[in-house]
Amino acid sequence: MAWGEYPAEYNPKIHGPYDPARFYGKADAPLSQVKLGELTQWLARRNMSPSGVAGGISRAFWRWQHKYMQPKKVGIAPFLQVAVGSMIFFYALNYGKMKHHRNYKHHW
Image (cartoon, rainbow, N blue to C red; front, side, top):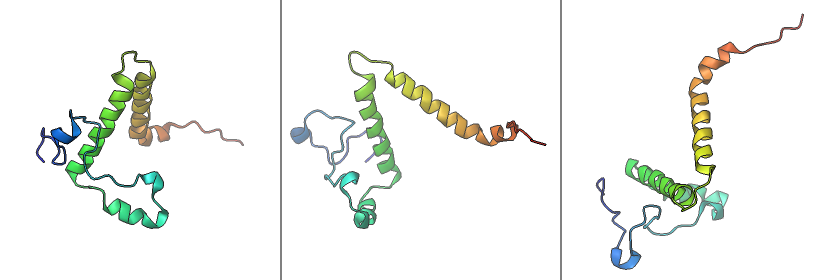
């Protein structure tokens, strides 16, 4: 699959209009139904190539878009999610610098 093309599994005659939030491959058991002993086989069936990971991230992004950003009446939830997510991300980036500026109470 090249960039900008439909997935090989997508067939417009069967699936109808293309939905970027949908996986068109063969259906597999959801993670919530996988037993602990079968977890390694389940993970081995995942597409861990760079294009497979990028496709999974893209589907997750479009599901989030369809649920929170594209309804007619958008609430404050997506904006708060982005704000809190960026705060956590930048805190993790700067944690190494901030931990040296802690205020300790020394009891004598």
